[in-house]
Image 1 (spheres, rainbow, N blue to C red):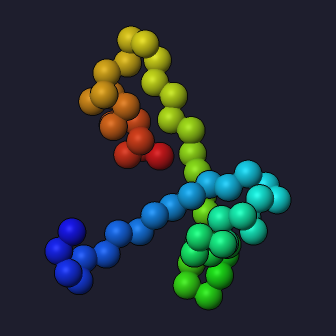
Image 2: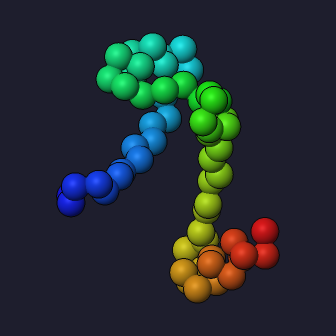
Length: 60
């Protein structure tokens, strides 16, 4: 990496194990800078193409 570049690492901790990761500099969310973490499962059928998946994501 070049000087001045930034990389943001995200981590999904098991519930109740956040303190372990805090020892390594990770911060629990929500906090003063960031809201709660969010996730979503994307499941693609075997016969569905990547183009179709992208189009379905945009429709929301």
